[in-house]
Structure formats: structure tokens, C-alpha cells
Image 1: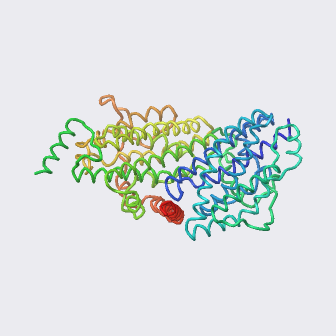
Image 2 (image 1 turned 180 degrees about the vertical axis):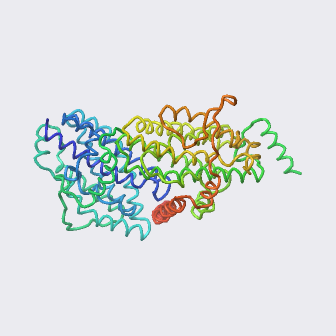
Image 3 (image 1 turned 30 degrees about the vertical axis):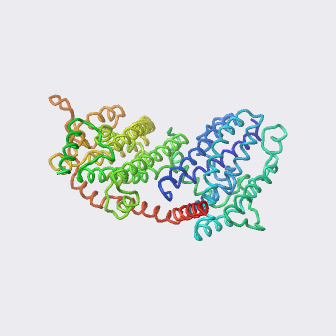
Length: 250
Length: 312
């Protein structure tokens, strides 16, 4: 098994899976019907990407785990998503701000990943680019509406941004897994994405009349399986049924 | 005199099976009946998102999660077409939602029952959506154009939902003993509430007569209920499950099943607000609406600023 490729694919997959799980908590409870449908669409796309990536991870591993065993039978310390995506939904401002920070990152990530020498990852990325581009368009337009809407919405969006900013540094962290795969032309050089992401977010915040948080200490750990306390509960809920009846097929 | 003429034209259209469109003249009680029926249907879709949404985060496989999420989203989409169809009759969505949130408007009572296990998601798709299709198929040819057209699309999607539910029931019924037990338990709990979905017995159904005349309804409650039982029993047998009714058996003479009536006292109780989840469903809808208030206000304020800026 190519250990680096397995871990790299799991990192990508877990970001999508955990974020999809968070988004799907909104279904049926959105701020109005059209937006409920739109956010559910984003959740559906995100789960779709997660499924493709987990399928690939299981093939790379070559063991007897399929995509469902990877999703439902790994423990908290074996999940490699970034801390940002596991943060609780909070109010709609927090959900949208979390999403826009990830969407802006994903547009850049998947654009680069589509050029990967790994054909499967490149294929998954090509499909995902179209989706995340639409997601960014949707969430960035909400950030502008919130920032430049009412005093209350501006305050909520600013608070969400202040709260979540400390998790953005981790998006660009790399270790020996990425470094090894960058040499082979498979992984994306995240450091190179950072200035582009910052520029894009700066422009968005300016349009939205929101202030970029300064001197924030950046939290880290998710990519190594050391999470915030939120992930354990998310997984407990998600994994309950397959673990209750481990021999059952669904 | 003039009204009389309009009424003659309307009646003539009815007699010729023609479609009534929003701009056509229609009697007040026809309009009222439609607004009530279409909005109740819309509310049912929206409230129906809740019991099923209850299992999205706990769906036991990636595929079942995606399918359930898409299904619940479809229900929301149905709500949207139906609210829009109701609006063509001169009401608006805020007014309709307000009636739902204050408990004035009704929605399908079935959604006041809880989804306690994953098998309930199977049972809802299979039985509840199955019963809904039976009620709704005839509405594709109903006399009011916008409603009929919305129903064409809705029925297509509902039959996909029914298959989704039946697929879950198959997995469970042919799975481990615990899974089979879960399937049987769900069937036991959903059987009678589903039979209630066709409404009270014909003799006690106050709205049926006009509804049939206007092609808002085409078959009676009891006829539909009988048809549903006949059709569903084949599937129950295939799954190796049993319905919780000792009196249910095939009657050779009438070539149909005999079965027990649901408990109509329970039905009245649930309709009047005392079902197991009436309070929770209404509270969840109210909470979502209230929490969304600042979001809607922000969108409106931003749209107004931009419009003013363009105008200036």
C-alpha cells in the first residue's frame, strides 16, 4: 500500500465527510425554504465527493475495508479532517462563514488537484471544481448580504469570522505526507495556495464591510488526528447504527 | 346576473373536463377549498421533512445518507411548488406559513408520529409515500391547472421515494434477525396511521362531495384505502412480515382483502393536536422560522440598498 497516498486521500475525504455531516444537520431547519434547499444541495455535493474519495482510499489501502467501513468504523483519532470543518454549526452566519472559508480554499485546491498525476484524484477534482465554484458563489453572496445587510447581520457575521479565524491556518499546513507526494506530482502544494486564498478572502471581506481578525493564534492538530471536542460527538451520532449492529448490511 | 353567467361557464368547463386557470372566474368556495387543500399539502411536505430529517445524520451507509438527503430535499421542493400553486389563487406564502405556525392550518397527521428507528425511514417511504401516491395520482388530472401540473412532477418523485423506502425494508427484512425485528416493529407502528391517511370513512367525510364534483378528488376515501391494502399486502408477504391486524384476510368473493378499521378516536386525537409529536413538529417549524428572521431581514435590507443605489 502507498501509505502517503492513503493518508492524503483520507485527509481530503474526511474534510468532505465531516463538513457534509455538519451541513446536513440544517436540512429541514433552514432560515427559509429556498435556502434550505440550496444548503442541502451543497451537503449533497460534499457527501458525493466524500464518497468518491473514500472509495479511492479503500482501493489504495487494498485491505478489506470499503468506503462505509472507513466512514463508520474509524475512531476519532483516525480522522484527519481539519478542525475548521468539524466546528458546530452555530447560527446561520457561523455556518455560512465556515463554508465560505472552506469553499474559497476548495476552489483553489481542486483546481490544482485536477492537474495531479494521480488520475483518480484528478478526476474527482475535475468534478468537484464545478460544484465548489457554485458553492463559493452562493456562500460569498451571503457573506456580502450579511456584512452589508443589517447591523445585526453584520455583527453576527463578524463574530463568526472572529470565532473561526483561528482554524484557517491549518488549511495550509503540510507534513511529510504532502511533501512526499508533491515530489511525485500527486499532491497540491498548499503553501502556494495561501497567498491566493488570502487575497480572495481580503477582497470578499472588503466588499462585505467585515474586518479581518488580526494576530489570531492558529490552532492545529486535525490533520494528525488530534481534534477539538466536537468531533467525538459528531462521529458518535453518525456511526451509531453500523456499530450497534456490526454484522448488518445496509 | 353577471355572476350567474360566469358560474354557467365554470360549470360548463367542469362538465367538459376542462382545466381552470388562475385568471378564469371561479366560485368562492372552489377557490377556498383549493387554497385549503393545496396549502395543507404544502405544509405536509415541509413538516414531513422533520421526521425523516431526524435520521439524516444517522443514516447507516454513505449511499443511504445521500439518498435520504436527496429525498428530504425533494419534499422541500414539493412544498415550494405547492406554495407557489396556492399563491396563484390570491394568497401569499407569509399568510400560509403564519397559519401553519399558529396551528390554524392543518398538515398530514402522519407526521405527528415519531421516527424511532432506521426502519421507520423505510416504512415512511414504502407505506406513507405509497399511500400519498395513491391519493395524489388522481390530482394530476384535477380541474385546477397549476395544481395538476405541480402534481405531475410530485408524483414522479414520490414513486422514486416509495422505491427508496421499499429498498430499505428489503435490506432489513432479508438482513440479520435484529434488522428483521426492526422492520416488523416499524410496520406494526406505521400500519394503522398509514390507513388513516386516506381520511375518515366515506359516510363521515364532510368535504368529499364538492371535491369529487370539482375533480379535486376522484375516488372516495374508502375506495382508496381498500386499493392500498390490496396492493401493499403482496409486498408485506414478499418481505415475510405481518400486519398487526388479526382480521386481515383475502376475501375470495369480493376479490379484495378484509381488514380492520383504524382507531378513528386516535385519528381525531392526533388531528386535534394530541399526537405524540404535534408539539415538537410545530415547535421545530416555528423555531426555524424565528431563527431565520434576521437572515431574511439581512437579505431584504441588502436588496433594498442595492436597488436604491442603482436608482440613485
